[in-house]
Image (cartoon, rainbow, N blue to C red; front, side, top):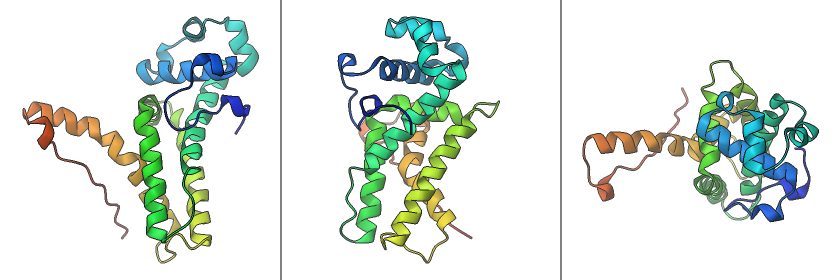
Length: 204
C-alpha cells in the first residue's frame, strides 16, 4: 500500500482532521462523498471544497480523478488490514478465524462509509469496482494461505472456497442487513424481534 503511516486509519472512529495529513484528509473526504453519492456524481472540485483545499493540491497528491479513486480503494483495503492486525494468531484455529472475521465486521460497523463504498463500487456498470474487488480478494487469499500454513485454518477444504467463505462471513451480513431492515419495516415488525442474518457458503 502507498502513503505515509499518518495516512492510514486504524479501526474505529476517524481521528480529528488536525491530526491527519492533507493527503489523508482528501482521501477520507473522497471516501465519504463517493459512498454517499457515487463517484460519478462527485467532482474533484466538490472534494476540494469539502476538505478546504485547492484542486491543484488534489492533483499534486493523486494526479487525476482515477488516481484519487485508486487511493480510496487502497484506504478501504488498509482499513481491513489494520483490523486483521489487531488479532493475534494464538489459540485454537476456529477461535483465531472467528476473531479475525469479527474484527473486520467491527471495523466495517464503525466505518459505514466503507460498506457503502464497497457496495457502490461492486455494482458499478462500467466495471471500475473490479480493481477494489480484486484487491480485497487478493488480500483475503494471502490471509487464508497464511492461516493454512500456520495451522490456523483447515486444509481439508479448498483454499478458494475458504476465501469466499471468509469474505461472506466478514462482509456479507453487513451488506444484507439494510435489505432485512427494509423488509422488516414493510411487514411492520417490532424492532427487537427483527431476524438476524447468518450466511453459510456450501461447496459442491
